[in-house]
Amino acid sequence: MTLELRCGDVVTGCEGVVTGGTQDEVLAAAAVHAADVHGLTTIDADTHAALTAAIRPT
Ligand SMILES: [Zn+2]
Image (cartoon, rainbow, N blue to C red; front, side, top):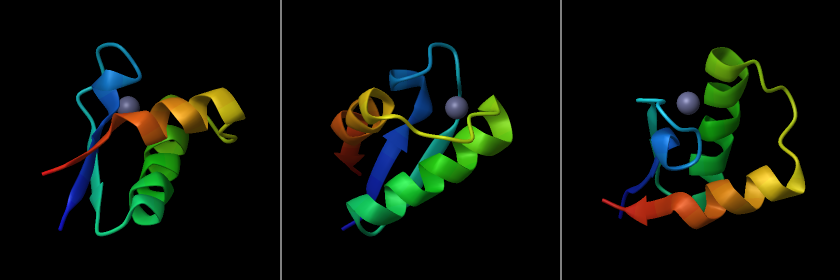
């Protein structure tokens, strides 16, 4: 199973999509994306919850 997280579900207007085989992989990829694209070097608890909630199976 592949999981995906559409960044636009969390950050309005972002076209980024990250995928992974597990929730942890998706969150790790999302952290890299957030740092690279959004300059977000730390993921706080609220953001982590929002990201987790936005993960969907493809
Ligand atoms: Zn993004």
